[in-house]
Length: 239
Image (tube, rainbow, N blue to C red; front, side, top):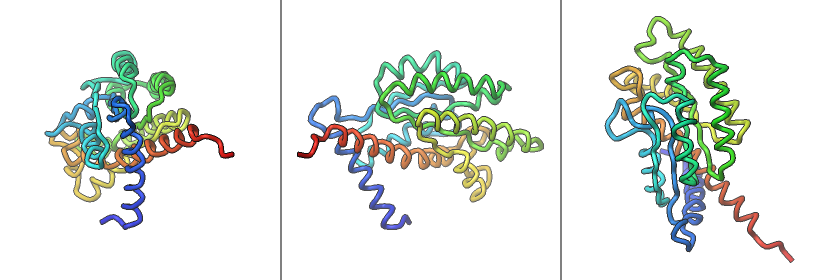
């Protein structure tokens, strides 16, 4: 059970977002949420979809109506997202955008330099929008069954990719969601099945729920802060 103070604080944040979205204009009645990424966003490995619809359901359950546009594609690399998904994402004028990318780049042996370069180009384009951008780091695949026997090498590569993601998030003011930490906590609590699906690579339904658990408070805080800043800027000066 969450402490009363945490529940109250989260309720206040959600109320601020809900008020912002309940403005008189009909076009403002919904939060447009766009997801870009790879198979973890499409939901490979589990019933019920990946983390985007689960995040949308959390927001809607809290009183925030959501229009979800999930542009993710299984097998996508960061270069694929930049080329194929971003034009549609930008055209949708999202208020919230989530990014989950890197696992296919890692699996294909792309260099850290190339991955970082493509990630920065993508981030630079997204930074020009007014959306709240939440970017996930990568789950700890060194704990997945297929990594048995080479976990240290896999773990090192994951950490390098995650460092690149963290650098981009800090540089462009994106919100970083710690899926790496969530995956480790889930595996500690329940073994690999606590996060990974039967294929040993993609998240299970529980894994996607944990992913959404990390995203939801990060998105809520960022949306509330954006709305508070907007209201402050729009307020008339005091006499």
